[in-house]
Image (cartoon, rainbow, N blue to C red):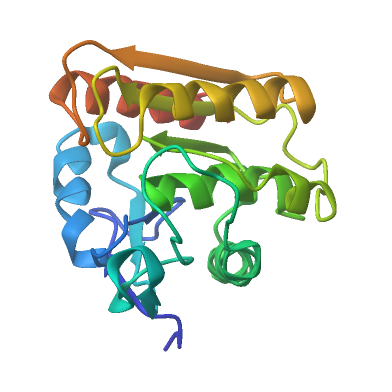
Length: 229
């Protein structure tokens, strides 16, 4: 049995041939996103897809008065200020991403059939992992993601996923992770890190969350990856 903490949903038709690993946002847990498995598995194209929803460790969040909550890295201030970011915490969580990917490969899932994704802080982690993963995987899905860690990532980049498909969806009136933050991480990954297969989708009227339209676009994106194998 795996020692990695996560909510796991088996494929409808075993043995599984694909895996989606989805990282939750700040203050949430893997169970908070486990609905996505049932939502996606309604499509028969995903009958052989297993889902893994990792649980973040509990951290004392500085921006929340050191209140403890599940987090992939610390947050020092809210808003647009990026003068201080938790590079060390992010790097620790990037090792966790790699462990989950390696676990799936070891279990028999081909790397090209693995998708890493996330929401908000989990999306930031997923996007950063595109830079640092030493394994080329099928693709990445981010909902309301952000960056700000590029200098630290520069020292850890592996260039294994430069042409791996990336989907990033972002609401244009997101009050928590601003639309400009979403556009900025897209710019950083495509211009600074030279990712060549990055799709950024904006969703008018969407705040900090997902919508049926955004989820539908993401599902089609992943389906196209699986069908291309």
